[in-house]
Length: 127
Length: 339
Image (cartoon, rainbow over all chains, first blue to last red; front, side):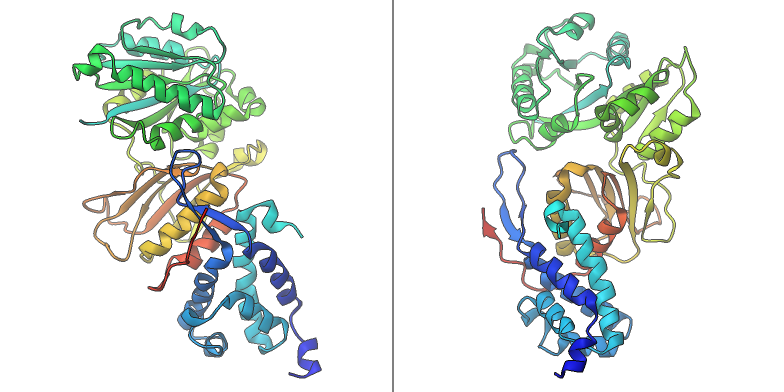
């Protein structure tokens, strides 16, 4: 990739990459009862990356945005990608997508990741 | 053994809970009703004021801390289960009167989730008394009062013989809790409480009529903007059926991340693997009743409708995260790590 492409990368990608890097390591304890005597399991938000990537893929399919779909599947089937959101943001930060596709993806990623961050609370939203 | 229904009677100090309870207990047909009182302070004054002094009376004192309440409450119900009336199978219902200063959520948690109570007792509904004369000031000054109103199935206006409920108060209550039935007529509080005991609150009967958008405030919000109680109600609507696995993963996640701020969640859910049988969910903060599957849809409206009464949570964030999970395709679940 050349320097001109990198320079054109949407700055939202770097911001979201920073946000998700902080957020995705945070743990959420699921299936417990807060002192009600039932033990739970701990997952990190990173464990939901497949859901987020799958959602983006389903949306691109539903709306017929084939170039985005192709970009999402370029590394392989979503279910077989490792940390697909982190990887996607890294690719967007590197300017690998064209402007329209990057805008399509970053608009949805911003809404989704910021919502996860706000729900997660101060640790997720801290800069 | 069938679980004995428990109706929680809450309401701020001086709002008329004990008066209402006394009137209730004087009504015919209340045989088999036990009373549990949770008071603030070492001397149980309300205990002396309630003229229901039979064997089925249990007093909880000093119970305003979550864990204390839980322990005391469990103990109280265990004592109640040992009373002669309970042993004879004559106990038909329990009314639990909370202290006027209490956040009712820990009490509801205990009733809904404590394994020592499950099977023998079940939460049947929450009634909250609201003083028509003083409630506006009380809601301004005491967040506990807002929370009491937010978790109720019935809001019972008291002292309406002295002063009709102001429209501003009615609007504010609707903003705080659009799910609750509000009774303002003289005698209405008693009738509503009796009705709640006779017919426990359905989890979704008060779902508002919804429009086409995927989420929106559940009420007009004029009062809420003037009185920033930070408590908002939102309705999330989905036209398409949801993935069961995805829906529960989302609900679990949101309850664990923001349980403290989910004051009440009620909903009817259309799942793609069982489209003829809607699922009813009902939760208070992080804790949910076991979901109930209905034998059929109650109306032609088969959309998923979930009402959230929240504190400081934006509807957009609830909606956006549900969008991620709702169509979860069959795939491996995240590999959880033990705590």
